[in-house]
Image (cartoon, rainbow, N blue to C red; front, side, top):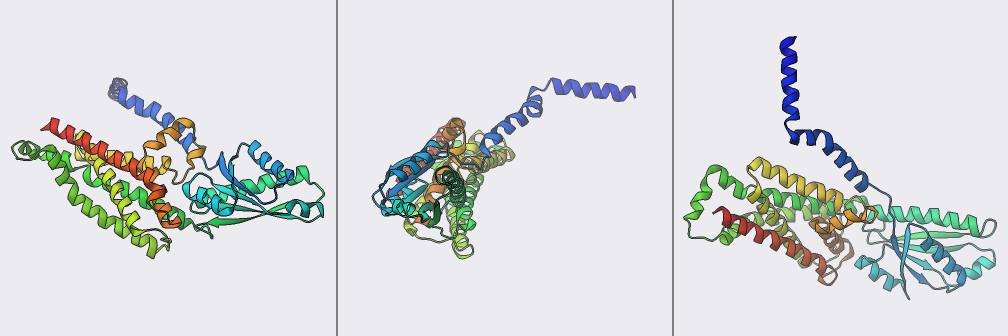
Length: 364
């Protein structure tokens, strides 16, 4: 018994003298709980909507004003036609459009119900369903307040780009974005560190090649492999899951190429800072899957996150590629609508490519 007590005392002393383990045991779960508590939210606020008012009556202006007064809806503008509003939906400037019919107020005066139309972006089926539910609750409250015994407002929903709100049309492109980033980072995360472990990195000092050439040569085979993998993923998405493809194959091909270049460059960077292949693999998994799932808008709406986390999403490549792949496949957009996202991905790729080159140069 005395030996067991002495052994137990020794283990406690080892634990106390290891601050890293104490941090992981005590503080990390609390930090993760706070982080996930702010990120994992399915409620949506600041839903941006546009209005197409064919009636132009003060009564319907009151309806729109009540929507703005709530904490869920933010009015972005009024449009002359549904086509103009659709352009804003494609650009991602509004999440919904409220279409008010002509002679709607006259119908109410004659005791007839009036139906308004809510047009939603069906490419994000989760958001579209949430917005429709919020608007239904708002309209019920508005009817009970302003028309308790008379005619009432009703609404019908039209979902652009995904009329049936098939979840596969929403999740499959998102999963493609996450898997491509994960695979690309994993493929190249062991390239440099593997040379360190087997001792062949020293031989590169004698080779007549620059660090830039080494990085390029390391990337090219994996880039070819990633292109094949991406082609298979897109083929499965379209042929098996029946995700529509309305855009240009060239636009998608160029976008995927840039996105994979970004993932491969990030993987090489991880390989230059890791001390072993195991650590490099763990880093590539943790730094690609978790941020891509939690902070890209794939599942949890970015607009419902705290401001600090919203700012953090701007450095997540999957956030931009989600906009690109859903835009091309579901909306049929071209380079004109996605060039900003492509520019960020290119800057991200070049940044980590250059950093990796300088780190390898220092190693050599």
